[in-house]
Length: 324
Image (cartoon, rainbow, N blue to C red; front, side, top):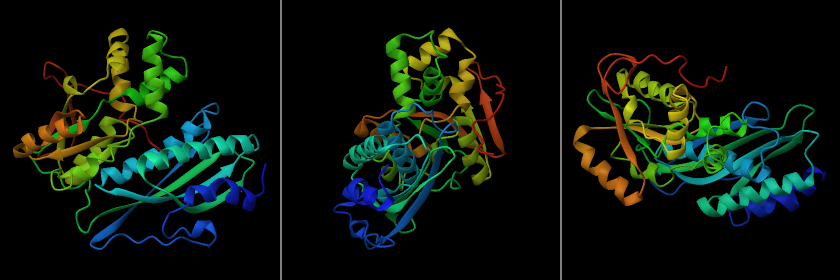
């Protein structure tokens, strides 16, 4: 495997080309300056082999997922991406070819999302492969979306479809043979390559009262909105939007609906908006060609209340992914 500085020069410096403040990775740190009237949004995620991804995951897709889960956090705050820092701890199995393929994935998504590498760190470890990325975004000063702004009477929306990420992990493990090959491949891709809602997030500024991304499971994450806002949230589970593949999985095994609601890895946005904003939400959905589905509402109280299709209380065992 190449030495640290040779790896930086040949693999990582090209990803920083043209990035203001990156200094072609020749300095100890980068300089990040948001445009006038804006402030920084900063987030960090770490992925560990055997915990957050499988050892045989393709390195280019793994790189793209690492970047995308961070960009999703930026989007959830209403931000636009500025750049990122990358820290890698290579395990003994990683060679130059693996690193180059990983970097090619980063390059592909840099182009798609107009973002550049600003710097980072690279080391070796006798332990599992560990990847950490810090992303920087920008948002108008004082306008960042937070989890704590929902009000009683607000409606709860989610973007896209829910459950594909969690079901995709099951598919990757060979646990969804009940589905067609095409459905398994669709779910595999949803798990490996989520779509951060980089256009939706900024468009929600001034429209949504609270927002976050669905990374740890719909129920767990929506509970964060309710908890931070000091409210109760009701989810009408029959209205939760499912892809065709997820619908097929739940139809074949109804117990999988618990995975849909609690499994995580969707990286869709869940947000609160006042009832009088319903038409604006519909118009935004049409403008972005992205489903924005109302699945519930906020009210006085606390916690999450789940209702089945007949309006009866639904009990879900477990509330989503927990990190500790």
